[in-house]
Image (cartoon, rainbow, N blue to C red; front, side, top):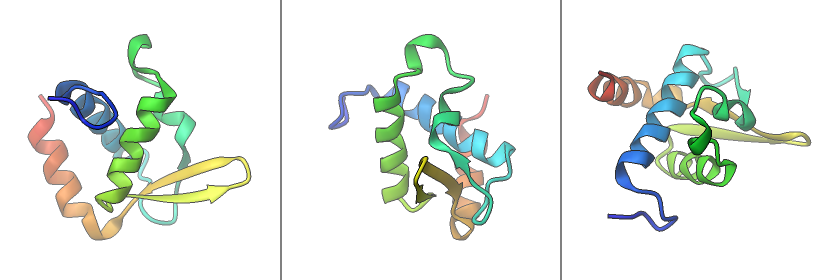
Length: 96
């Protein structure tokens, strides 16, 4: 099965888990945020496509798990504190 932006389920889930766990590790909840370009770091070379990452981030923003803050130098990301329980349950269920 493919999502509308042509990413397989397993690859999508891998990127989603990476982004969420990275933001949790960085403690980027609500007021603290980081640039979207930092989400590529730590991924293997074939997964560093910024278009795929930005589409996964948009999907997470539609779920309201991630909040975006537009700035003059790019999009800043933080986790939605209201969804903390759901985010932590998702990470715990997907981590090996």
